[in-house]
Structures are given as C-alpha cells and as structure tokens.
Image (cartoon, rainbow, N blue to C red; front, side, top):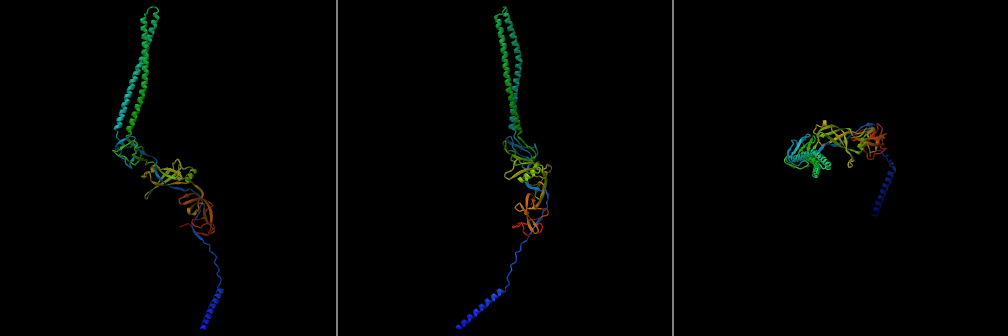
Length: 418
C-alpha cells in the first residue's frame, strides 16, 4: 500500500516537471512582439475658396408699417349725437372735410342768438353815446361864444360905470350872465369828458361782445366733427343717439396714404452708415408678405428718431413708401422686411459663419495641415461674415467645426460642404 503511494507521488512529480520543462522551452522559443508606431489621424474637412474683393452687402432688417399721421378724434362740443357720416364706422375710408358726426345744435344756436343780441345792445349804447358826444362838442362851441359875448359885455359895462352910465344893478346882471355862461361851458366840457370815458368803456364792451359771438359761432361749428385729413377710421366709439362730452375720444383716424416702414438700426449699423455719407436718403426696398403673395415697394430712409433707444441699443428709422405704390390695401401694423445697402468694403473676404472661430480666427489647409489665420469681422451678408485679415485670395478655408481644431492638424480638403 505504501509502495503504491510512492509510485503515484513519483508519477505526479514527473508530470509536473515535464510540464515546467515544456513551458520553459515554449517561452524561450517564442519570438519577441514589436509594437506598431501610432498612426496620426487625418481629418476630412469641408472648405471654401477665399475670394478677395470689394463688397457692398445689404442690410436685411425687420420692421412694421406705421402711419405718418394719425389723430384722435374728440368733439369740442358736448351733447347728443343726432347724425353720423356715411363712413363713420371702423375701417371706414374718409376724405378731408367729410362729416363724421353732428351734435344737437339747439343750445349752441340759442347761445349764438343771445351773444348777437348782447352785441347789438352794446353797439346801440355806443352809438347813442357817440351821438350825444357829437352834440355836446357842437354845443360847447356855442357855449364858448356865449361866454365870450358875456365877457365883452361885462368889460364894456365896467368901462362905462365910471361915467355913471351903467347902474350897479346892470353891472351885477352882466357879471351874473358872464359867470352863468362860463359855468355852462365848464359843465359841457365835463359832460364831454364823461361821454368820452363812457364811449371807451362801451367800445371795450363791444369787443367783448364780439368775442362772445365768435366763441358762440365756433361752439356752434364744433357741433359738426369733420375729418382732418384723408384716412381710415379705427376705434370708433360713438353712434346716433349717444351723448358725448367735450373731449371724449370717439375714434382715431389713420392716414392710409402716407405709410412708412419703421425699423431698428443697431449702434454699429447706424455708425457705419453715418460714417459713409449719412443715413438719410438711402434707398430701401420694403417686402410685405400677404400669405403666399409677396409685394415689394420702393422707399427711402427719411427720418431718424431724435434719440437712441437705450433698451435696444440702437435707433429707429422711418422709410416712407412712395404714394403711387400704396394701392395694395396695406395698413399700419403690418410686419415687413426692409433691405437697404450697407457700406462698401474694400479688399475683403466673405466666409460662412462656421469658418470663423471666436470671431477672430480661421483655418486654412496648407500642405495637408491646418494653418491658423487671424481675421477681423467687419459685417454680415445674410448668413455669411465679411472679414479682413491674413487670408489670401484662393486660400482653402475650413468650414467644418472640429472640437480639437488647431494649427498643424492634419487635414484633407474635400471641397465645399454639400
């Protein structure tokens, strides 16, 4: 039994030893592995060919149509509306001077009659005072003549008194007659002064009465509200039978013949245009899309708001539309597109936005590798950027966005992106 165990142990040791010898021989005879060198990745990129030259892009902006004139309609008289014009309704097209509504005129006609009556009374009193003044001025001449006669008579009697020809009573009568004539002249003169002052007051009263008549006439005229200019009515809030107060807003009129496009220019855009000859007078094309129909209207930049809009960082510009083109039913409030020429750039390149990194760098394929070029963005033409910098005519500028893009990266240009 013990002998069998020793035999088994010997066999196991022999097998283990043989396996070790075989493994050692295998390791010694296996050829050594040589690592392969790393292969540099080559990027297939889309490119555009740079073309340098002069370029005048178009500013494409959005805006809305506004009326050059609009006004709130408010009656200056109060009362019940007794009649409205045939076009006095929302959307009604009216002409300048057309009747919009009429207010009950009874009270205003009565006030005008009273004012005219008061004026006539005052004028009559003035005429009477002027006639009396004229009569007193004529009589004062007789008073002076009478006074002169009495004075000469008194002097004559005084000269005769020393001769005993005239009695004392005669002297007293002559003296009294002279003083009476003198008093009559003074009284007449005072009456003339009073009449002159009275006439001045009556003339002032006549002027006040004439003003009252003018006011009454104007109030009577204000019972008829007329259209101030050609336009379309909106926000109509009055009808026959309704009582309105002076100053109540009853409608708004919008001038449909003088329409303008109102749009916004940024500080940079406004500055560019201002430095290149100014903003005003530049041509513009207004595009109005009515469903599937597109209308294009000619306009020109005519006015600029008086101050910059701090909230938007720019300025609002008005471009009136030529009157002979406004036959399309265009109304204020419509959204439109505005195109106007930008400034002209010299010796620049137009690149897709994807070709410019961080607004300052672009990459060009040179000898199978990327070369970094510094650029400056000057403006925009639709989806493209207008740049200047170290890009030469004919350079293949990369438009593919690679996360690890950088100078020296191996790349192969396959042309413009499909």
